[in-house]
Image (tube, rainbow over all chains, first blue to last red; front, side, top):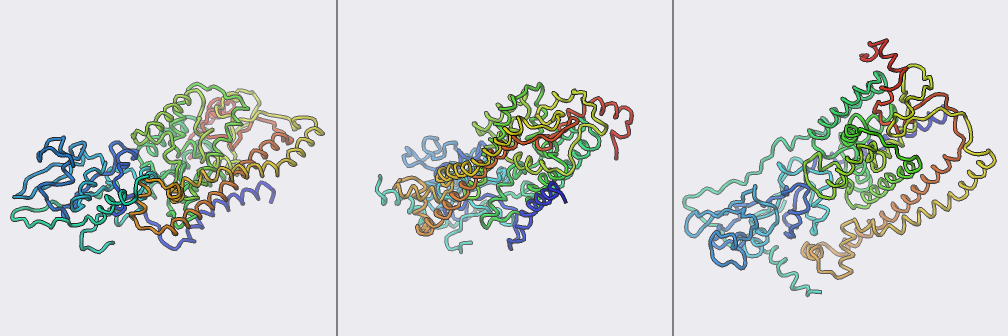
Length: 181
Length: 421
């Protein structure tokens, strides 16, 4: 065996190392997706700007099960609201993505229009500060490119971005009284 | 600095937010269901990508080694662009997967076999048959290949100097990934916005600039920026089956000399030293003597840059902010999360240590590469009787096949050998 042949075998062995590394790890690696852990999120607003996609793949989700259906919704209405109507100056949402519909006295339904939502988290902050916290930001898999390295994950101050396995692709906010998963 | 209680109040308000208002009891209303569509985007195309890669590499191998057809190689390149560039999901791709391998080596993150194969197969093929991935399988290479129209030669000295840049990028990105700083190459990829139709401004500008440059300077990204190209070069240097310009015998007609835009064709040379034997021997001795100094200098430089690299790790950055007593969102989020400060500092120390070790080693390796290149220049050149392809630099574009008169004559006489099955 000459020098060249020896080096070829050596390089071949180097290439086998990553494959052998797999045997070292006991757990079966699954395909993973990016998700926000709603318990850690502090609604800093970076989800709207850091995503490579514009508008962001992060959208506000409304968990109706924990909503209070309040007339004076603190996620819908601004702190300095002038009147309680649907005028844009009274809304927290900068794009007007929340629609407010009357159901029965005194309850209103608040629905997110995902096409307008940019994932800025202002409504989430309002709802969490004075309401039930039924609004939260989450990555939408039909929009997310599932980048190898999520750009938002790098800049998130709360390190709220986690990788979840394919069989549980969405993390929801736990309801009051529910056990945390 | 703002007082801590004032910072905490809104944050604390959030974590105690649940159920201020009771759930209403409706008479005539059905609550909408939380619709989260899980559709085709969740299909795991891992093995499909491996299959497509194997197919493209196989085709490229046939086109470059057996058929020697530039037309076939261009077609494969176009196919790669469409399938791997636009149709398949962009991530993860072989060009960045070596960082995942690094992360998998240094912590509990495990890479599935299908992705490991995606990272390792092009390198294995490079070891066996040369850098076929660059023409069949890599969309970044394909887009540059199709954009290159008029070759402007880069001066040899500049070319060799610029070849160190991707080595530095590779070493830096590997250490950052190993220190838990994330897979930072992915969003520095200048062609990612083009393939995904997203608009990260600095990247798009770099991508368009590189494409514009690529019209005249062949494959600027591949030769001077691509970190995976360094690995491919490394494995292709000792390739088992080298690419030849023609199946027939080279007649030294010199027509191919100017055809390779990537500088991969080596002209015939008699065996000789670049300078007088005694002077050359002295030069090599001097270079060998300063190699330990160079390694030490490289290691020292790496060590000096290590804190910067360590800052890419979020825990290390957070510890710095805590020590600076800044009131930033990161600090607030940390306080709210209830994570133990001791645990944080331990994790940060571990990452700093990894960054230090990694950067020192990277500095030494970088210095070693430079010294090896310099010593190589002073070495005796082996004899070359004909025009040969440098396997480390050849990306199998096939321009030399199309121009070589011996090859063209052979293909005209035996049309069967063009499409051998």
